[in-house]
Length: 421
Image: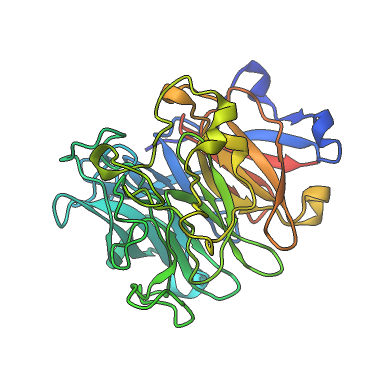
């Protein structure tokens, strides 16, 4: 599996500086480089302090890029070639596959990483969080242990009118440096019952330890699975922890009229409930009101505020209120990270969110990285867009590396690096 530094275009043979726009007058100037190209749907990244980068490709598997630039495959999906070992139960379908990756905070002692992937066991499918050990020479992994094996998955055998198999799969893994727990985001799988369900682990944010057990400090409602940190989510694909407080903040992919950024509160309800007859709604296709009534193309954007919000404060007045809702648009928010370090100037402490840019009918709209300034109380936000070459693509993952640079993976097969000057 050969990877190499890529030429984006003739002018990209050398790193170049991206100027700050007028709207971002206080933004740092950014040098852009391509770290890897020729990948297949890179989904997530995780770093060691020396710059070693683990990364996943959704339909292929887990690999590692060493500080030397060499890339080694580690663990593949069923049918993938070139990997020293594979998971015969792991498969890729639609939005599902091998997704989040996280490095154990004590990696130097235990050589442990965690990966979120879709499994065929039991049929028709489920999502799992796997714990594995990396060999000393970074040539293989061993001792796979599935610490969570019951995360909801949307199977192929469905008559659902929206989306395909594997849809709304969640999939992000992140360690909170404040409390030392692993956070796992899961999607609602286009199932109206899932987000508010006390027992189905979909449409949730989980907080667990290294063995997959619930954090003792979790406070879900009575009767809920103890692993649940928050519930009532649609498809949170991004989670990051605010510098100073380590409060978790999600970036959530919404229906066709809203995406959201929300500062989470332990035990909180994110307010998504797409079941019929909730808050006065009538029948919906396949009992999923997640696109009602705005599944009609050509709806005047000025009218979208009348539609069901992803955070339904009418049905759940005590739900966690989002800081931002994308101005009645849904363009596909994905990963999130906080920028830290003096090199970022006025952006130090701000959140960045990758936006895949999905409009009506799947047309690319607004592919970008947003820079988010959250209010102190997390109830509001100022959002601007980071200047980036227009050809970048669908931003699937954003991670700050140990060198202080921002790394961004796009579905089109490239991992970019942005360094403030």
